[in-house]
Image (cartoon, rainbow, N blue to C red; front, top):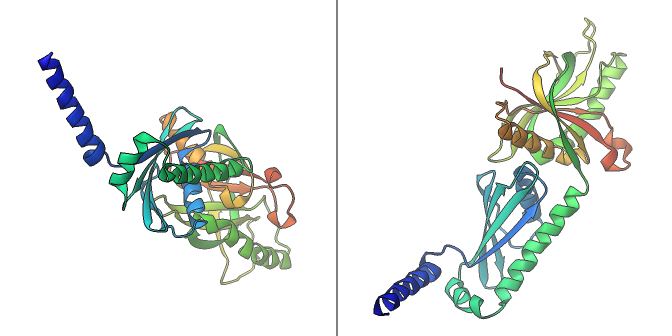
Length: 296
């Protein structure tokens, strides 16, 4: 009995040391959602911008982010960890710490539902509601392996954040349209965006906004517009419906598909647009085909 009591004592001391000193968080919230890690990542960042007294998100990688929120006299750290359950379901663990009252929280939590727990649950619930609202406004479906088409094009090179891409397109759509139509240049398909660089750490991109045209010797000369031959490539393909601001959700779906199927890809998505946002209407009827090139 004495030996058993000693073992129990050591285990109790070990647990208390872990719980009060080693354990790196005060509270854990876990949930599952039918979407990709990339969509969750982008949704956390967008949601964070809507909060008062929150600092910019710090990202270790696509699946691990840290967020800090200040409420009155408390500073809360939210460490988000995203993992894949299967091809369509992601699991999210949110490790929450009240930096200024961590020890007091650890003492109080086992004895009832604290204000800290309620506040944390309400905060995470608010994010989940926003995420579900977003998912109801988009449709992403991975089609499989296909090829992009070869075409000559007029294009305008741009740089910015992923979320700024659609605005850049809209700002230059009328320019390309007016310059080309003034010279009666024949179009050879619908507009597309060619991503030439994608930094997933800071969500920045360099891209060409392209209008397919028939190559000729009489193409208009304008310092803002360039011309080139785009050569088609073998690629993974996805269909996207929704506002083009968030068409990058299909990029992440293709990244996941490539990873799950051991397909080596080049992180330079190509987006082909079949709807004109200037006409408005139901965004779920806006259509785009998204391609992610496969390495040779």
